[in-house]
Image (cartoon, rainbow, N blue to C red):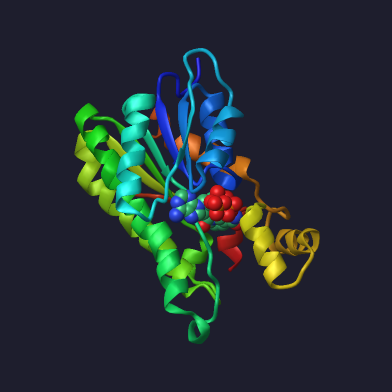
Length: 256
Ligand code: NAP
């Protein structure tokens, strides 16, 4: 028996990185998973790699979370293909880092659009199912950058906004059996942090080592670290936890 037997989970931005780690963990614990990502081919490839059998079926869906029609139609396709949704993880993300005076309108809009508008559109589409069945779990990916980070005015704003978003969802949806929480990761080794290494002109291994050296637990995080937290928050063991932000950062927040 897995914690998610019979559950239908939607994970956005799950063709790779943290989202793929979360999708993998849900499937390992019995869920059927809809892998959403911009490219349907990559989403389907990721879905095909998840543990299957014992009633689990997975689906890859091309979806731009920042587009209202795309978000709505993705949730409809999940309902038609797998069944009504029980779990939503708003994970899709982008960075467009720049100091404020160099940050363009597009840098701002792209980041706010994917993280904040995207989480809003996906959650609004999924809540219909949650409220009808009086059951739902929502997790949004915040970040330690929510606390402020040089060159990330757009990203920090979006990530702190998500913390306010889940607090409000907790109030509005709690009476309908829905829990909403955020996870704020520290440095996680993915393409996103590798791209930052490239941007600052450092080899990936050196960049990761520098992050590990600064961290109280002396290592970087991996998608599996975030997946473990997401699985707990989306399980029934966490049914009395809502509106919270869990920092999964090896203690980075303690020393920043
Ligand atoms: P990643 O490796 O860059 O993966 C992000 C995924 O989101 C990609 O597959 C990307 O698709 C997809 N995506 C981008 N825009 C999208 C859109 N409009 N609609 C649907 N999917 C979209 O990033 P990650 O490191 O796994 O990060 C996952 C989440 O954790 C993000 O919200 C990020 O901000 C957050 N986070 C990450 C870290 C970290 O250190 N890595 C730390 C704190 C928080 P494409 O490949 O097609 O672009």
